[in-house]
Image 1 (tube, helix red, strand yellow):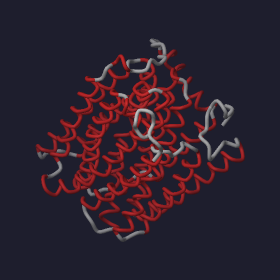
Image 2 (spheres, helix red, strand yellow):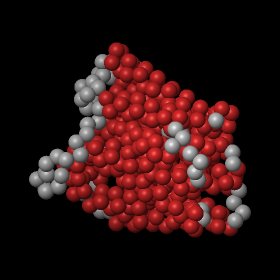
Image 3 (tube, helix red, strand yellow):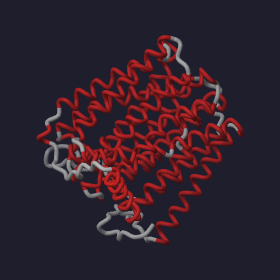
Length: 429
């Protein structure tokens, strides 16, 4: 841990000097536990209703497909509207969706198409929520603390990833699935209260894009963000690699329940602890980045190699302790890739473009999941979960090696120092 700063806080924690960020962070931590509980409950519900790997893939795709379609437009909205107001709207909407789904399950007549419709609605909300929320961070803490804020947000996400799935796995056997959806709906109230209590006078002033009213103007605004990504090799490479890894290796909402049941002989509790162990690795990775780790391409590439090897290992493992250790590696690597890319973007993108460029990142990171989910579910139905995981891991390693060659030989990008668009010439990717 680095030495304390002048205000007495370790450097990794100085971001908590900002009252608005403290409100944001505490609400996110509670709500994310509920979100992870619902994610495990939803996966297990679909498996109980259908016993079909492809159905798991289709539901996962239904939740993430709207992000792929609407994510870039969400970035345009993020650059125009007051972000706190936008986040209040998205959180109320997400709470309502969780409540409705919980009542459907509680009624006892829930069907897969109900889950799919709710997944589509939640995905639509997330398409706007993610770019608004991620670009809001710099307004709460300023550029000087944004790296710590991104890392600590990732730590909260992954602390919840430890607690939420473990609780869900235990509670499903005790109280059933329905209460988990209702608890998630209630958790959003804390987030909403935090946004309402924020002092807007303490938000850092940032440039906002002009509100476009014609279809052509909106399209031009979208293209401006895409053009910036295309012309900046370090950002382009990071985002493309994130998308490929997300599609190939991060399909555990589909393959996780199957691995727990078919490879390990377990149930919902086994799946819950698999996901919780991934959360432990993710938390360690996030805290390392917060307390002195640097956002470098080397960390992104290391994450890509390790996640590929670990995913392949899960496919080969039939022992719970081995799988748990491998899932920790998956979790560490996921944050090493995602949080590092997020930080690289946040530190280098102009204020007026931040929402649009972050929407490219979130659209690629999350929006490739529908493709991966359907492919993973279909492959598991045909060749089995073990072979699917093995193929995904090997393909991820190969793709990461290609990315390293592209970075080093074509663009001579810095691997061990924090890249900057001011020092890395923009060029054709």
